[in-house]
Length: 84
Image (tube, rainbow, N blue to C red; front, side, top):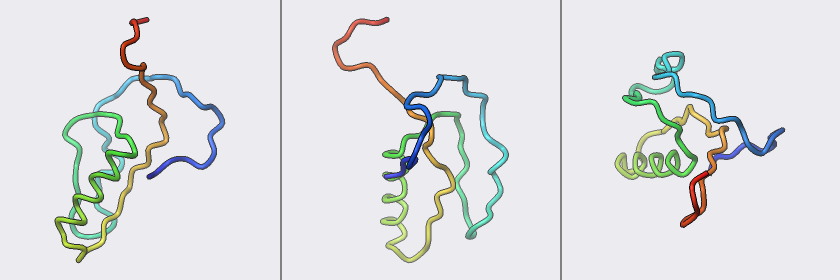
């Protein structure tokens, strides 16, 4: 799975999502592309699951380029803990 090799800080500030990204919307590699309909943080497991599903659907005849990288760590609370 994708993960940064070396990070300066283990956790990152939460920040805010600002809608869709239009900077990387051009297709630079290949003939087709996927565009996001909603803004969301995507984990490396989701990227890997999408890559496997696409390559299985194409029956390994084409090439898939992944142009996003999960460099923002997303933490979550453990199960059955109180809020706060």
